[in-house]
Image (cartoon, rainbow, N blue to C red):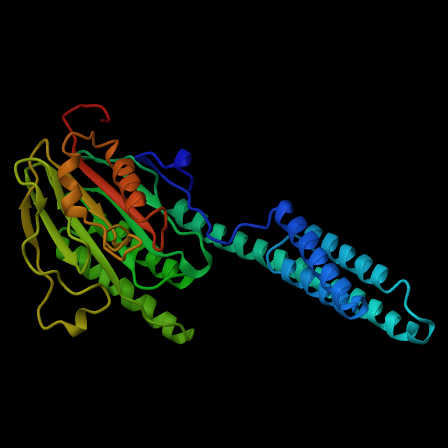
Length: 379
């Protein structure tokens, strides 16, 4: 995404592909002229024009790997004409060889054009499929801001729309009889199977968040959803997956319940207690509960009025700069004390992009939770 199209803090943003840019016509013309001139000069000095000219035939094949069908066709026509011109004054006893050279060049150049057409078609199909996957993911995730009686939630979701690298980041905020339930998760792996697992656990949360009276029961329902999905995946010959997740229960008082299933812990950005709010060790990710000797437990922390919580996926914390350094989220958070909650997701994302030099290797999901003032408007 270009800087001019960076997402706002109240929407799910689109992604960008990473395929190599197409060749410019100036590059194609430069290659054709430069190689032709070099071979012509060598041929003049060595007096071997008829043997050097066929080397031109490699040019359309090279251009077919990056250029358009039209560029490849122009290069093929140019090369065929140049080879035919070089063989124009061929002696009578070698006309057969010259004709065979021209025929070979024509056939080979035609194959180069066909290869370019096949490559362009494949690239368009891949782009269509990956865009459809990311669009489906965005369609099933509700756009920000999200609101409950207790919360105003701004956020940002940025998928990677590159072949099989589309991830399984999901989020949701549900108003229930037991307060607001907040959910953010990241499925292990990439591609459509990861998206399928993400939607399974997302659907389970939307149902359990309303029907289950305790946060542990909500997480148990998510665990069961992941196990069911893995069972079906195994029958289809696909890999089983686990899901890191953070589930919060927020009521009218200032104490918040949290169960962290191996996810990035939340940060308090505004309030009396800035920095990480969870002190205990994370529980095991969803789908791996059988491997843990201890049941998942609830941890409590204070979320005072006027406080702001930042939730994110590892697309933020594991983003690297060109030197391989991870994004220092906690260190950068101190600079955002005066940023309005509604502007915070875009602010974090811009800073993340600068750190990673514009590269994005994983989906990015950010949620900014702000306690809703009684009868107040969206901030």
